[in-house]
Image (cartoon, rainbow, N blue to C red; front, side, top):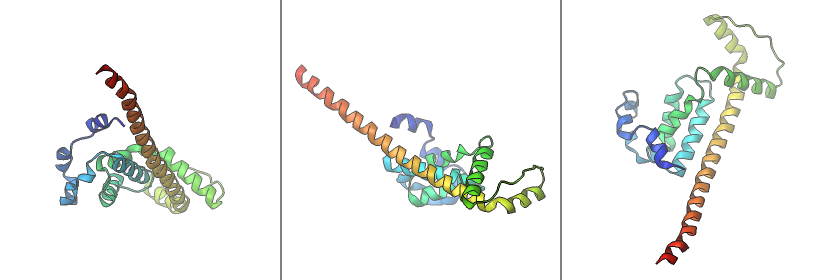
Length: 177
């Protein structure tokens, strides 16, 4: 992986440490595993971030940060990946999750009408929470596993390619001496 490029995209430890909201974690943020970028840390961060991103819960960034701290994986990557579910993508993602959950639970399709009110929202949520939660957990698990395995494999392939390049260059260096 282009480690220097990834590190340049993320803020430094010292910058993030000064964020007010992260001060609730206290000295826990001093753990170097939360800031190092290596295969284990990056893959774990993808797993955490993608898992939390597909959950229909508020404060996803805070949840991702807490889980990243608990399992000691890269904190910035975990928190950043939560933004897969943003205001533009949230509706299609959760509609897909609900549809998957409804299909798995064997529920029939329902008619849908939208009204922008708190009573409509709470009433509809009471009707759809089980299939939405089931579909979201399924999508979260699949995305987390796919992200974790993909990063591990891509990182491994990158290392193998670099080793192969070094082996190819080695005979040229020996011949030139």
